[in-house]
Length: 236
Ligand SMILES: [Zn+2]
Image (cartoon, rainbow, N blue to C red; front, top):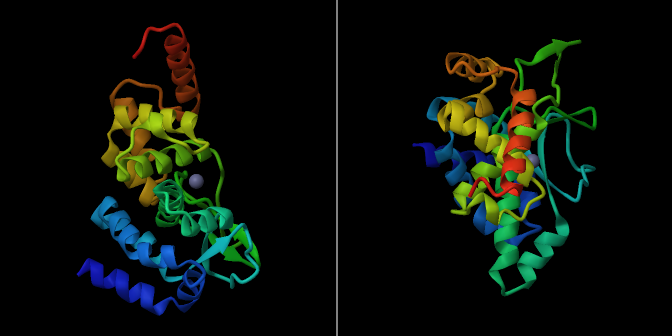
């Protein structure tokens, strides 16, 4: 059973359990969040998520000093954890959960690893990774789209509209939305959570639709156009 697998992985990752002791709130919420993320990933694309979760450490404010080699990491804001734990208002709790969810999506997507004390990799959309000197080499070509899609999936998981987004990623979310509309959420999830074929499935879909497969340039244009139309009052 999938849920048992999550519990097993959590229980055997003692480093992560140690990190979670720093926040009672996160400790209580983590399993629910992981279950929700697991459910959002197409079943045959979940291996990355399970593998990365088994070595996950949570950093607070980029303090990676405790991370051992070959662990995977996400970073959370210590101040936000303090606010979430010490306020009765739900606002900060939700903000913290959304931040954690967004970061866990990066984790579920491809690999972010600490190797020789250095964080390597970029959880998200990638061309097929190249192997250089025995190590995987990543580019940040799709960084904006990656952030946009992570945030879009986060907003949807929390039942929020993109205009309610309080993160710094609103432009990126718009770009991701344009692409999701064109090629479908399922295609986007498959390339996000499993990069075995890089961005090829998305480009193929775009070509079938007679669209420009050069994602970055195209989305830049369309976003620009959309903004101009919005400013001019043509849309919504
Ligand atoms: Zn991010």
